Length: 115
Image 1 (cartoon, one colour):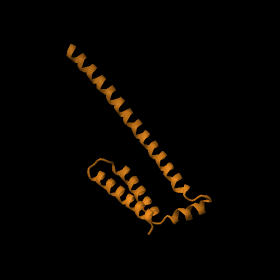
Image 2 (spheres, rainbow, N blue to C red):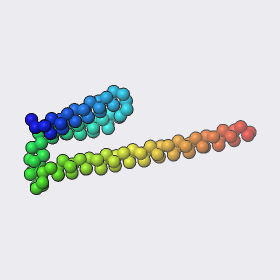
Image 3 (cartoon, rainbow, N blue to C red):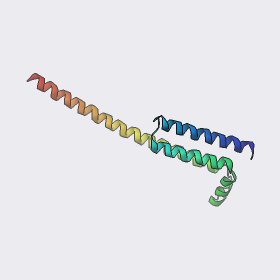
Image 4 (tube, helix red, strand yellow):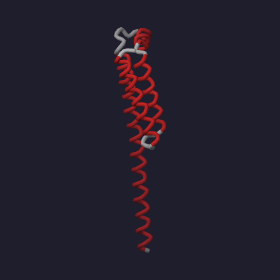
């Protein structure tokens, strides 16, 4: 096993342990943790068997195999950013609705106290 393979495998294992620790501390949701586990496992597999990238790139017709993992990582990061934006938008809508409901309740309470 080459030095870079050991390094990549070590990074993937450390990342896997960090995600597992975050789950145990309830710092990350299970759905997000599952995605990060998949990324860690993919990194581990490509770290140990880098020739898989060459085979996959050849099957897809990519002439420069090292660009395939980089392209996949960029795609995954874009999807992650999109999912984060969607979640943030949902949270903002819920927060706005709660603020509106609170304002309505306060108005009703003031009206009751005036009577």
